[in-house]
Image (cartoon, rainbow over all chains, first blue to last red; front, side, top):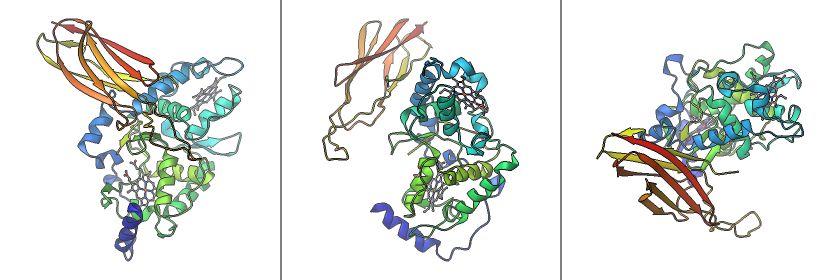
Length: 258
Length: 107
């Protein structure tokens, strides 16, 4: 109820606002820059960042033998600090086998299915989030480097189209909030520029880690649109666009949000 | 999934110095007040006690209640008296214990 009322109030503000351009590179800021001092301090210290509990869990899963051949991720990939450094910075990437883009969580599940012969983890399950956070954490501090692959171009274009298209009962696009009103607040929450730099991240409100897809689905529900399903090509396209939009910004996985 | 714990204890300290200790553990802290999709009660499952000993002497303990968030984080202070082992122990409703230890060198 609360957010519905706020949404309506925001709508009044946004109607008639001319569409501003994309955010100039010099003005780009990570979501963390908008957070309170307390939230930033919590993120900055690895013994108070609750996301690090999942990274620890991910590290245990990385080393745990699984499947018929009792292979762990480490059996093939060795030390993640070396083999996974920089990997998350270039996802989503193009996947040859499915001839479609794949995000990091999907890539991890593909290894689980093909190389360990196991059922994929459910999207947003604690295990998949933990492994994704663990792999993501190996790229902390490294700049986002979207793959330079022409086969991703149509998906990037789709992602941008989704970002710019108004939707839902409130008839707002992602851009209405995150390009045109990023310095504003919505019901006390800073709107931010929607950069995907900290995902998966720990949200105090969720009392758990959550993926970028969860966040984007929440924003879709916020404008009372039907969210895309977890793992849908549209959500991966949005991820591709967000990564392109944030190219060169440093990864912070796992970030903390209120 | 097994619980994971993250603790912070300074590696070194001066004798008499006030030091901060921090302890966080992964736990869902199910309150016992919620219902599942079919209206059935979800049983309470929380960590209800945290204790901290310093070379065997209890320097801190806390009772935790259902209103405490998931993955409880506790920070407190003690005085560095001697080199030794600092042990954090969490106990949940089922009586299961989780332990994390760290060493401190006091000069």
